[in-house]
Length: 128
Length: 346
Image 1 (cartoon, chains in turn purple, green):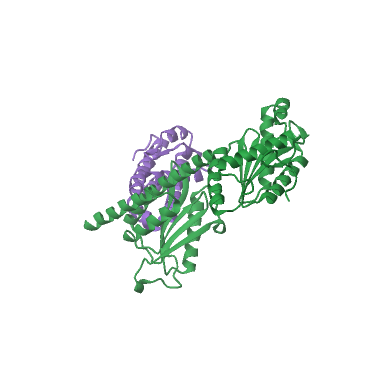
Image 2 (cartoon, rainbow over the protein chains, first blue to last red; image 1 turned 90 degrees about the horizontal axis):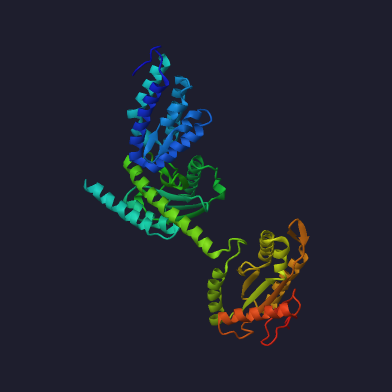
């Protein structure tokens, strides 16, 4: 992980971190439920959080995956901690949806591989 | 490895059965017949948003409380995924019970929903409904079950989308786009069925041809847009005056036609007169003003007029309508053979 000159996490670095995390979630969950359903769930989760974290609405979600290019533009003026909170809420919202649909089946696959990284990201960013 | 191949074969035949289904019930039945070879479940459900229909294919020994829990859970999950909240009371439930388990594994009368897999049926980002596998056993499903169910869900969603498209094409084919009444094409098809029933079964059948008097004047005075509004208003009046079993269609322009199955001459005349009086006494909104229009109608009937074909029956009604026009309009005439009459038949 890289820090900027001031010793703080820049928006771009936080976005890189979550871009990788979301890509991992996508790869894992799409193998279980398919791209179309997963894209639908991502869109739904983003819609639910759109009011609180408007920058999430710029995420490009399709059956091909997720692209954060639009978010990068929108996040220039957003504090890195706010970006971090937004993405963390998104991951929580997705986890909630997965649990409502398949109880523990998806999260059981997801938790060991992805959630330690989410926690790690939370720890690193909160420390700064 | 052999088990995976076996499962893939079952999955293939399930998908094939779904894709060749022609109605939602058939989808559920094809899936229901194949699914026990893939999963161990107590109940399999398909919820279709468009008609608020929930089909359940379940183990014979499923107690009602279990069914209730499944319905509640599916509606809850769907409401969470969809853009509207659905209440379980509004859902029409269709349950098909089958023997899915050996006798010694029958469900307890107190059995409750312990695990489920529910997936949305989505096509191009639109949610059409959801499917669900349910069990009275805890942790009954694993990741492979989820993968298989999602493949089945994809095929179901695609097939349901075809149904939806087909049904809207069917609507375009049988309804008149302006008035929302059936169109002439549907009338011809319906008449063929009703006439055959009447001719071979000996039951009465009446036709009423309806024409708006001096409609051209409305178009010439107020323009075609207002004329269209008048057609819609009169269509609504006609719609409200016919019986459930009757067929009402726009025959063309300002002409309408009614098929009255099992209606003798007297009953047809009463219905037609009721319509005539209703339209005559209802002021219609035309270009900010209120106008009263009238209708002329011609009636033909089987067996009274001894028509030998449906075409002849239509011709007779048309001739009676002509007599109504010739007799001064705002009249109901019954076909008489030479010149039609407009008195109540005795």
